[in-house]
Image (cartoon, rainbow, N blue to C red; front, side, top):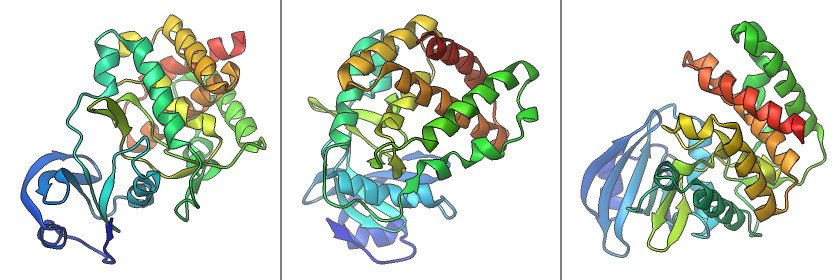
Length: 283
């Protein structure tokens, strides 16, 4: 893997430094622009260029992806502070599998990917974000900004988050943004992309999967699915079912707080909280 020590890498710089051929625009997100290109040594590759102000999570993501070493995550071929060159994954996403009616199979695949990401490795990248810092938005968001009927739910979720963060859990390097559409097929393999680089309880990496995949509200906003998902993950991982649900509650409240800060809709999170808390309290 080639590491470049530079503060800003343009598309032209990346093409020259990594000997890329025929870069073509592939996608744009709020934090990055992605190109598909060819590298002589690697074949099809994805070049991810971070936008100015993308944030520390995105900047750490490339180093975290490289640290996974291709075990459960896409391989990284080149790295700069604001750019990642990695293998091109052209298969379906795990979200496609779930949305096609194979949600139970998708759950087991997701658990397998996370298990590989959590495999023991050498020292992780520096400056991973502790989970308590990750949850800052939840604790600073005024509860009055939630709808009145959701405020008791948020209060319970916040108390659960505090208890989880106060617990003496293993400090494991985490992907930090595991959801169905961040896991893609590569041949017979499934690989994660776009880690955030967190540090904390390994159960947290399953939390976001409860309110995903995207564009599947009828699937995820269903008490039966929440129960099945929690049971399947607990059986596959040996993490206590109620502990998995507790992190799902905490993360869903955090996700709602992020949306409130961004001025985005948060009705999905409010509805999820009611379902998750009911399942968590049922044991």
